[in-house]
Image (cartoon, rainbow, N blue to C red):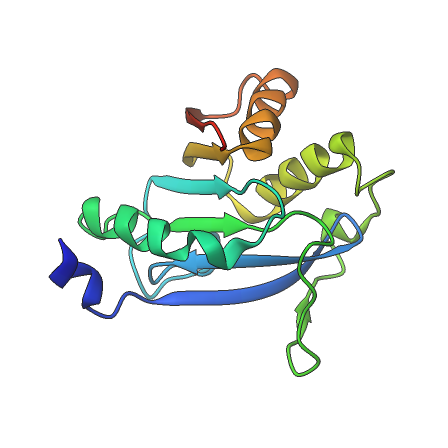
Length: 165
């Protein structure tokens, strides 16, 4: 497996405005837009990682690459930062669209409730409704995942909870 991980696995970094907060999204695999990307056949499943604190997405890149490799590169693996935990470098553009519901501010986005709504807002806007999800939460990310499933019970998902230290 080590030799597979040494192969070039594409990781695309985006900064978006979600719920009024800058948000880093790391996307492992060739799929950067699940709605419009015609260059590669759209997968039927997304592996979505919600980190523990401090919400540093890059910490999970080796794990995401391993998952991507172990699924024979068939499914994208995306990692989302917590709202406000990653700021875009000055030379990076923050992506947003006028019809993007994520541009609306979420009340108390930096609190627990706001962080949960932040992840749900991202999924509503960036992931097609018919796409199955594998939700992986680490530490506080597992709490967010459980709360997301309580709030949106019809979320088409499988869940993996990883307890923290």
